[in-house]
Image (cartoon, rainbow, N blue to C red):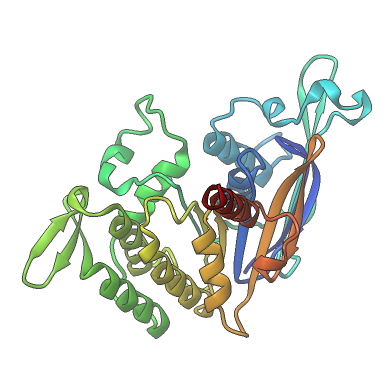
Amino acid sequence: MAINSVSLENFTVFEKINIEFCPGINVFIGENGTGKTHLLKVLYAWCESETHDIPDVELNSIYEFWNKLFSYLQITHPQKFMRDLHVIDPDKKHLNISVDTRDGSYYVSIILTETDTDDTIFHMRGDVSNKNALPSIFIPAKDMLTHSGIEKDFTKRNLPFDTTLIDILNNAGVSTLKELDAEMTAVLNTIAKVIGGKVVYSNNKYFIYREGIGHVEFALEAEGYKKLGLIYRLIETGEIKKGSILFWDEPEANLNPKLIPHLVDIILELEQAGVQMFFATHDYFFAKFLEVRKKKNTSALYHALHKEGNSVLCESNKDFELLENNSIIAQSIALYKEEVEKVMG
């Protein structure tokens, strides 16, 4: 099952926005502060929430959705999600989030209303009575595998991490599957060739095992190899598989440009294997290599978030170069002009 669309109203930087997705690769670009990571976390929270029967409460999965979103964004009250309350029409003080899956079976709309007593009222609509969690993974920009072990203390201690950072440790630390399908095995082989070995998890630590060298602990590995090694690990544990949804914040972080085309090849293989993916990126090489290397049957969309007045809007296109509000290309052109001016004196 894939995510079809998301609609947000009065949520953080978004006054009102609707974005439709493709079932393959979705890439968010935009300047800082345009809500790329917020979008990833909203979608991830929706995937991770499921229906629970809560006595005297009609929220069901919405209750869990909010709890997930609170922990992912480290927010303590729904009101703090609301966009610029002081400038919003008093009759429109509400927050609306809708997420629709590909087949239209499940969606939810949440409306938060301020009352005179400062209580928060939730309303829901949509068929969420039997919603199950969707298989999903969120990879944060920060490397976490070298911190393996802290997830065991997270529930008891006041650690400065949002729970997406803990989720990735829990998901990577499960046992490996006995068998993988041929497509996922092929992706593992691709990654092993790039990093020069296989990823091994033992005694709460991660290693890359290389023939003739042995086990090299992740703490001693290059950052780029650790990042690709994480994908290896999530595939062999079955967390990334056909029908799953991958959210990845800044996949280019700590990655040498030389490794970007290898990363893109891995992503294209995952798309062909039936994984829906969402990326937030600032990197020209990542976005451009993806455009150059995708095939005619590749399902891919670029979503350019941009500010217009006090609002953030979205423009979507299959072609990276055809985006009118392309902050990545705009800055590349600005650098080229500055270089020409310098050479010309």
